[in-house]
Amino acid sequence: MTTTSSPSSPHRSTAAPAGTLATHRPAGGWTALADRVLSGGAVDRHEAIAILDSPDEELLDVMAAAWRLRHHHFGNTVQLFFLMNAKSGLCPEDCGYCSQSKVSDAEIPRYNLLSAPKLLEGARLAAERQSKTFCIVISARGPSEREMEAVCRIVPEIKARYDLNICACLGLLSPEQARRLAEAGVDKVNHNLNTSERFYPEVCTTHGYADRVATLDACRSAGLQLCSGGIMGMGETRADLVDMAMELRSLAVESIPLNFLNSIDGTPLEGVSKLTPRDCLRGLAMMRMVNPAAEIRIAGGRELHLGSLQPLGLYAANSIFVGDYLTTKGQLPEADYRMIEELGFVITKGAEAAEPPCEALPG
Ligand code: SF4
Image 1 (cartoon, rainbow, N blue to C red):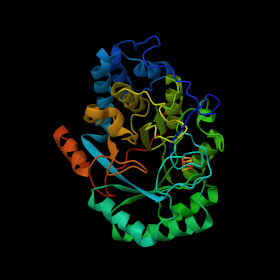
Image 2: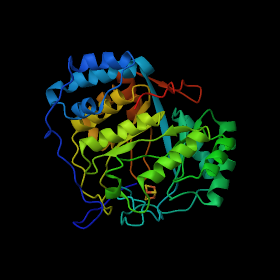
Image 3: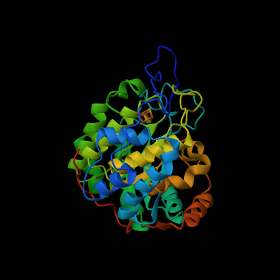
């Protein structure tokens, strides 16, 4: 997943720079807002935008409010996810943020679906690295029949050998495909909304936002848990980010990865991302305040964009990927373990780790 931009590109940035909107601090301040959410209230659109628009001098107050919700639902635990890029490049879609798209010239490995032994080796590594979830990801508009069969065959084998949850990220899915994945033992499906409905045509023209929502609906109907999140830094406005967070809430998504665009050379969004580490923290805090009980994961771009503020992100999020991302390097697992330990947090291991409560919150 990555991007490149030219003046006539559908991927052209329309970003409003952070800090230019008027601030509408909630009445009673950030602590009162967290209190209201803890009592069952919901953050509204204006309040969510205000979080993204909050001044640097209030950043720690905003993070403290997010921390109260994170701690209420997850204590001091951190869940690790492990990504396996099971099929790389060669994708016919034109998602502008994605290095694996047909419109990307990025230098990445390109290969078809990995063999069963290689997938099993990936699962072994995920278990060894204390990951709770093994994510099988393929680059595709949607899975071919051959890919569906291979995934459905390998999932029971992985689960028989390792104490792992399985998340499948295979692109657009029909209700029938979602049902087959559920029957094979897949626990959740990742399919990111990525951004708002309004901004979606700016980052992809080969499929639409409604297609993505339809896949999430099909997965929910099949009894699968939903993993869906987005990307900050593609040129979207703060209102776009909030609209995406609210849509995730209305879909009762259990697991939300928030990526920070790594503007890879050769992609349509090359050079677009202008995020500061504080923007990223405000994004994580907003996602937590809007989706208080969801598992929120600091995803791609963590090391690049949060820099030395990475640990602070875990006061809003409760999850990270351990190891590399799909086509970019992550920091060494030992650095992640050290960060978690120094924060006084603990890793929850294996599939027995408590799932976040799945509750439909008011939209
Ligand atoms: S469908 Fe997935 S793999 Fe294909 S270009 Fe879009 S994000 Fe990349």
